[in-house]
Image: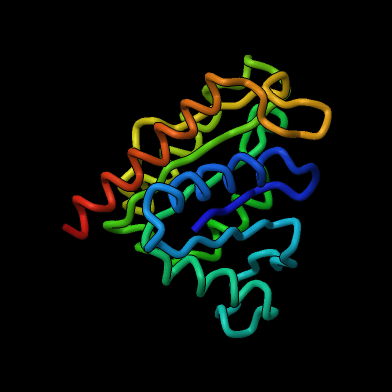
Length: 175
């Protein structure tokens, strides 16, 4: 399951989807799906039971609860993960990622933000008891061409390494 935590632009969704496609190419037996938050109307958490939220919110949470392993992506805004991604996390049960493999990617306009996901997303995922991979990937805007295609070969290699690691860890976990 991929989760793209952006409401505008396509770079983050593209990077998450690229990891999913590389994993699928390596293991055609897996099913992949992307929750692109640009296409979901996730309601703001206000303390109600999940069943009282709209269908997009309920469907996204149900898909996440059922998935086996994850690639989570966030653009970096104001030196932080996006609010829409944090809001999605606030809907989740605290054990949602327990004994599940999670990798993450982040995108930003500047290399100054390369450790934001590591410093903010990793602790959140640890709270959720996720088994977080080590080969997570940061992608700066200069790694894309004008059509938002990834053109940086090193980024491509690192996305491939992340897909390999997630499949390896998932295989060991389900072994």
